[in-house]
Image (cartoon, rainbow, N blue to C red; front, side, top):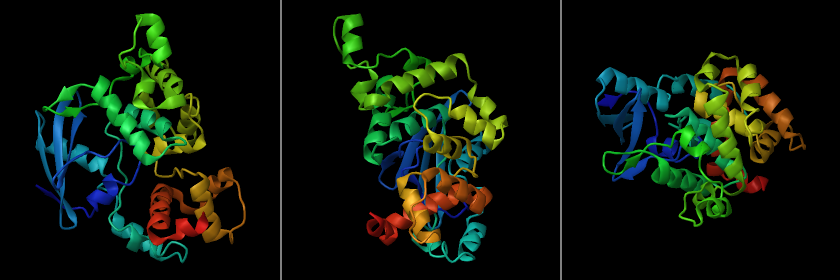
Length: 301
């Protein structure tokens, strides 16, 4: 079926958003097992002109499948209206041409987004996506022959951190530890986050919070600073007023708005949220990819 909402599927999939790794590519399609309620469903999406060609396999209705797809690719967001917003600001006017069709790639599993975002801190896109894929294959549930869900928080909570701990308890190592997936120093943060969301926090409650309340709540998660918290809120919970800020966004914002002056990352975050309002998350996404694709990032190094 054709879903008539403009999108660049490959750009969206490969844009490094920390909601999840890119889906498995099979020729022209991206495929992934998605839990809809408690039912596993195989989603198959490909590009059809400016739109998505969508098929699914699983015991749910067409309406349920489309609703979930709309959420993951944020298809209800009006890109054309956003492009008009960009074009009305001289600093942002070129961005839609370099990133046309780029959408938020929202979490199909909020807990996966939290662990992915923790893993992404001080890490390359290639490395953190590989770590998440390895975790899925080691400890996730397998469906439809070769597709894995992300492991439940209860499972990660009870994993060993590294080979030393595993060897002390079991007398041998067999890769049943988080560091075997290349997450490095982030392993204890992942275990503590898993315990926190198993014992103390209910992920569904975050949807009911204001942005500020949700931000302060996510900052309590071990291994989560302001940038990772904003990534979690944007990609995991669709808080579009989030403006994840790091050294690269700082350089871009400084170049576009402050004549290259050195300003703090925290001030850049405050500026982005105030300046762009409900468009902040999309502006940040487009800024980063515009800088990569236009050569601006190379100039700012």
